[in-house]
Amino acid sequence: MFFGPNGSGGKQEYTYTSYSDYPDQASYNAPFFFASEYDWKKGLLLKSTDYKNQSNSYLPVKRVINEYDFHSSDTTKRISRGVVLGKLYDNNMGDSLSILYQLQVASYDVLAEAFNLSRDTTITYDAIAGTPILQVTNTYNFSPKNFQLKRKQSKDSKGDQLAQNFKYSLDYGATNVNNNSGLSIWNLQNKNIISAPIESLVTKIKGSTEYILYGNINAYRNDLPLINTIYSLEEKGTTPLSSYQYSSVDGSNNFILFNSYKPYVVQSRYTSKGKFSELRKNDDHKIVYLWDYNGELAVASVTGADSASVAYSSFEADGKGNWSYAGVPASDPTSPTGTKYYSLGSGAITKSGLLTGSDYIVTYWRKDGSGSPLVNGATGTVVVAKNGWTLFRHQLSGITSVTVNGSGYIDELRLHPATADMLTNTYNPLIGVSSSCDASNRINYYEYDALGRLSLIKDQDKNILKKFCYNFQGQQEDCSN
Image (cartoon, rainbow, N blue to C red; front, side, top):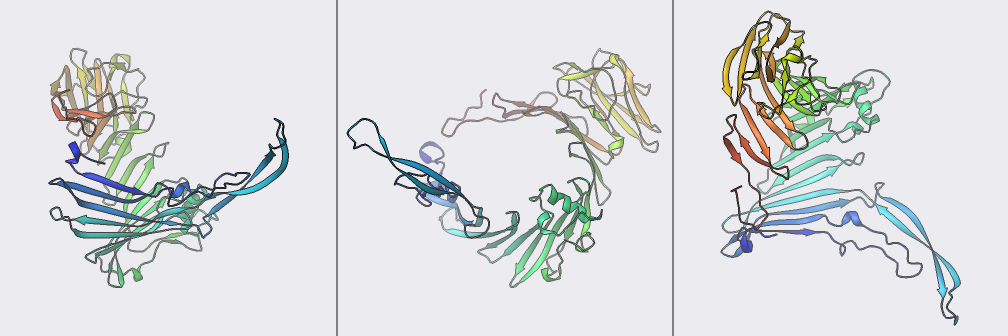
């Protein structure tokens, strides 16, 4: 593959396994049964090399060499037998009709086996001389239980070595005999969730000794296959691996982890679709996510709040973002975020369940000349006016609920504690984000071309911040459109 006119920008070369490396086992005699094929061994990348063009000569910049392990001699190999019946005709009887001479039977194999990348070597070359300056080799060991990566070990030409180690649900002897924490592992096994790492540990190898750098453990809920707590371990490379104990399930079905692990993230609430709606870090710092567009896309993230104290809607999709209202949003392409707004003439918007000891911020954009919105009976403070809409802000204290009524068309309605920050998004479904609004209600807009590729990013005054241009390799760059 060449880059630039006549390869002036360099080139890339790729080498793959092919039919000549693994030919089919075919029969060329009657009854001509199907070939036993090795298609999974073909088309695997063996080597890739990046070159730069220097004075019309190509010098290597980087080369990657791959090796594979085929499990052809163990229980991972599968052979299905097939049978072919063939008729043999004799056409030398002197007439136009063929006469059955005999029946032949032959068998063939339909083969399949597991395989994985066992080693890759990356060689980096000097940009001037084109000579090797660094080589990094990764070796991979995969578990025979689920064919997932069990250990990756890296070694560079300077002698530095790092390793990553993984454990999965099938690596534990969990049961469902009681409701202890081991039940969460059994549930993963029972639901065939066998590729999600439970434990990961990174180590550094010095001489013949392996030392711990850091690790993570994902602890799941007992009732659903969702992460409940993420534990973190940070060492300074001074604790030998020999003193470490990998997580396990004991005889009482308890999930046991090494005593140096500390809770890092607690994902305490999820949506009905398994999206996390609230998580808490070990410093008690909370993050809330609100989802819309059939519960698939995150429309708001709030730091420093819990899910009961926030609400948001741009009135774009099916969700209401913790607000309650009966009216139906209407379309307006000038809406600050998205393409819809809500008319307060169709009904009030409310939110209850707030704590009286907190101060709250409510903001919204009102279309100019459409009316006078009220929040808990009061008008808001004007923040800024843009493109025919005005941003209002209310600060509320000692309340347990919020009511937005009065009159007017509003958009981008937000509620959060005064100490929290809210970020919001709207979307063009199946394309991408259409707008994003930061904690200060500054809006960016995103536009896409006919192929769904990002083309423009604009600020809230519709000034272009970034422009993206696309062309095929070899074509002249053109950003005029």
